[in-house]
Length: 205
Image (tube, rainbow, N blue to C red; front, side, top):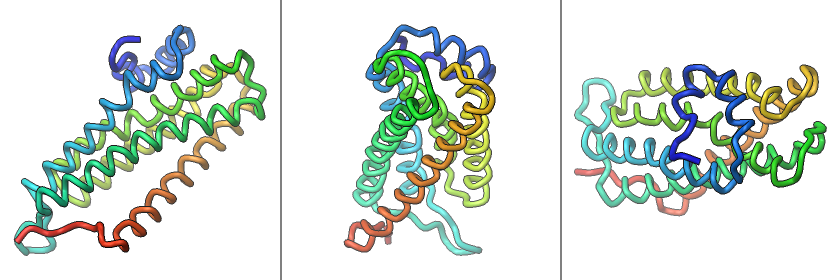
């Protein structure tokens, strides 16, 4: 599988791209390693630049920035969390496949589950580039738009990639959305816990 294969297509013509992904002869490791480590670097690197070089402002105050070491630690943690999050989401999608009657071998279902997780999170990873300019309203709009498109990709992709009828595809898609929301809330809680342990941001003077 080529590096970042289907990334552009899933953003421009998802129906055709889901069909092409379904036909791909790849393993779940190949689809994960050829995409996620590179896509996850986008929000991590952009955030590091935004937090240390640009900063954010509150009202008319001066720009607030983090120290390089603090930003590096937080962005590295974000990068690892993104890798783990996509992998775990893929495992949940694969685990639910039998429940919704997805046909095929265990290896093929595993590929499909990982591919689904990789490509539905692609818009969010790409949108992470906006964090290079930490303006709250702009970042919120872009991330929300990306999240909306990710949900669209789920409902559009499940019946194609998993070869399911309309009813089962809708229920499966809704379950994936629910798992995604649970993972997001879990990540937020973990962040609060980590900050409470004294590993929170350190502001530059």
